Length: 430
Image (tube, rainbow, N blue to C red; front, side, top):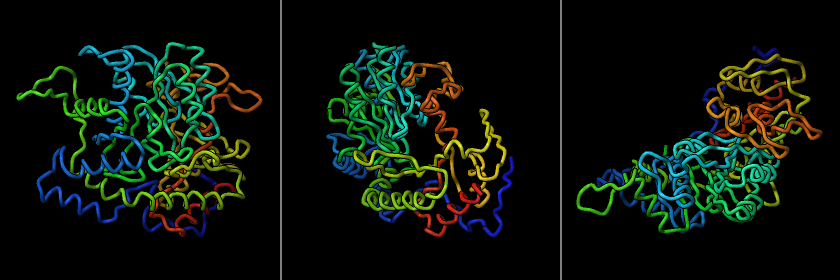
């Protein structure tokens, strides 16, 4: 598993080139200092109030609830959808109570785990090639197989909006709610509207690697005051309006701290700057790789403007060297004129830079391998690369995982450093 390619003349980067690290500006520290100076360091304060108001206005929803993580926002959005659909849960049960939920297959597992938290069963919907998001054709097939499903959880992979109009039309026709995971896509738009505004309930993330950060944190988004108040209550241990600690339902310690909110508050004015930097990185890679047998992560240029959070590479199938992956390790055979994600990521790492494999599809994950998985051509189980039709592999997500990788996309990366990454990738195909 050692590359035989010639990297002579190239030197490791003096400073590590990260996949996507926090970019701080100074205003963050001022807001955090204000929280310290006024002693508002817990889960109430001016910073929390400000970020809720500013993000709701930016995204175009009426209410926002600042939480400890994007995962917390997704959990409470999923829990709320289950309660709306199936009623309030018993203390020892989740609100989904065994019901199936249609979920994106190629995503981070934070999109999916809340279904398990609430005792539901995820059914994975295959990926389409135009945006690498949930395939509406496969979603239609899933409703034919499971007509009683009433909840869909969508994500916008790597900051690229999916086929939102088609998915919303299908959901409306089947009377299904949508939870929108916009954790990776803050600042991305679809037909002029911000992602985070398309779900019945939506969630965004301020994790350290996101386009704006609080070091952690997330936000629940809705147009319903009642729902926002419900999530705010759940996130503070479901305390009732009583002079003592009165609890009538399960609660969580999910509220954002005023300190974290201060970091987010200082980041918000720089969002457009970060968006412009991320787009420039994507365009520089696309130009730099135009002579290689690869493509960049796609988007629908007539409908969507991604936030270009991560720039990704997909190797043409005929240009793939032999590669095999187990659950924890990968093996490949280095071949002249060809390469594979394992070789490229290994080469990038050897020069002090960070890349990452594409998200491994959920139906391929050990914890979810027995869950149903639906493609536009049918349904299946596990890794189905063997199912081939005239258009190529039926299991689109597994195919993208096999041939794709995430490139260093840090917005502090210099053009010279990015040129170095581009040269390393070229050497992998020499």
